[in-house]
Length: 332
Ligand code: SF4
Ligand code: SF4
Image (cartoon, rainbow, N blue to C red; front, side, top):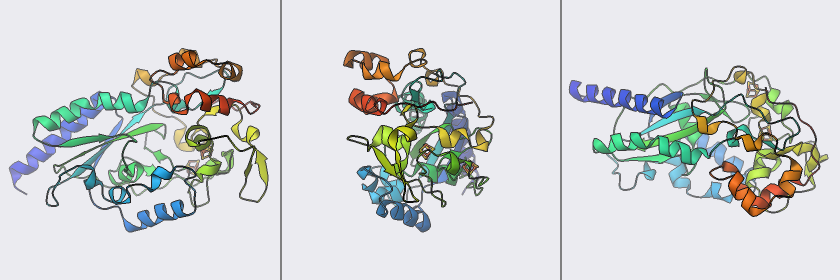
């Protein structure tokens, strides 16, 4: 590569990092787009074939794109360079729901991250466009192995609990990826692993975390309260052959679960979010199970406007609030 080209590439990298920082990101890294490594594809396929994705049939869609992110940029030719820029945005904040409130996972305390981050990353797209570079923002909206690419881009490593852990930030992060057809020097992939303390395995209410770190969605409270369609089962079959009532597994959670992050030593001092929209909405502070069970559609629409919770719709939230709640440890 010629000296001028190298300088332009480094300048582009600095400009993009600066724009993502301005957008509120705590960490940004770059990886050259290449096919996903075979062992990672095999592991993902085994997870699917064991049915651990539960009812998320969409996880089986577009395997070709999932394995080759270049396909996300329509019309890119095989010789063109292609880069993935992965950014981590903390959503951690210190406001808490009251202990007896209907518990909502922290990522859903504020506004929908898809909308907020897409909006905040528009200047990145505009800058790429001004240089004649084609870019696409992916925030949980494309068949992209986001955590895999976050590791490749050197911004963190995946813990036993399946979460991406970012050094000095923690795991309460949203990931956003911008894929574009230009070359930028890639960062060193992160080859660290978590402490392996197994606290997340012990704390998981549904025993959904396998010894190998694979999550069985069918016993995961996040999956059951957000993605699962239809009624909740009365009991869940545990790996040891016993069964446990769903009420005891949900505790007082009605949307998502933070348990495997709450206990993780990497979250002892999480870096707080720089984005006000991710803070706890005051209306959710004391929201009770009774409030949800008696909620009307207009109230639901007002309360959860631009919130991730709207994904369950009112019927789903009521379904989640029906099992008798039990008190949980507060999130520190
Ligand atoms: S989100 Fe909750 S239920 Fe799911 S793996 Fe983590 S601790 Fe277990
Ligand atoms: S709780 Fe322990 S085993 Fe689980 S992800 Fe964190 S460091 Fe790893």
